[in-house]
Image 1 (cartoon, one colour):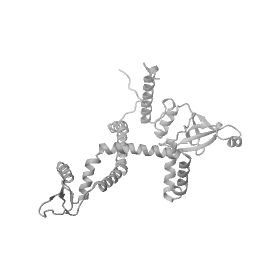
Image 2 (cartoon, helix red, strand yellow):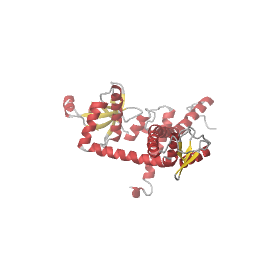
Image 3 (cartoon, one colour):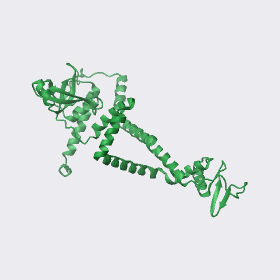
Image 4 (cartoon, helix red, strand yellow):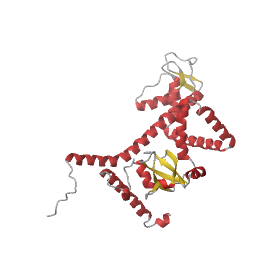
Length: 322
């Protein structure tokens, strides 16, 4: 009879249930949060960009094509329709006259939705413009095209000398002088400049440094050999290190540290980023010292995933893909 393993911990039913819930959350949360974020982005774009553009376009088109008359000469007071030449008009609920074609088009569309006809001619015309010219399958592609065109023109404008001077002047004299907007704009601009800059930041290796004080170790990416003045003041080689923040490594602190005070880590850049984004939960398998069970399982899953990717890239047809 096999001997019972004394080293295996005994789990109560509650602990088993809790572990299953945590595993289920680890499985469901990533795709669920991805969907939620995409829905939030889509609803934000619709609320603050698409809807205002549609409202402005609807108002402009209505103003341009509307034929609303307070009265029609010779119209029968008992009849809601009247004719002027070859054009028929329909009386609205508030007594205005609009072309029968417009009224009938809106009336038919609202009957299908079981909605009430607007009272004024202006509201009826806005409904007509929305149904005829501003359907979503038209406005969404058109908005994307116009937005891309605006981005292209703005980029071309800033690329030329005069455009760059005007933009930098407007930033310095307007945006950087308004108290509240100044702080928000500066922070957002730093993040966007880091993410969208064409200049590539090259990380040579991963190190650990005692920052922000002795006894506290932080992960950092070596970016360069620092500046000459710092090198001469230190009397030895100095490294420039980016210490990223968790869980958003796009921001961090740039520090200069003596090379002798850095610790070279035997991990890849991807493993370091996984460690930072997970707030230290995901530790590379060869660097583990006996962390929590959840952290171990996550790290093993990540290692298996990386191994599968390497195997897929080195499998049949990999040379053709390269």
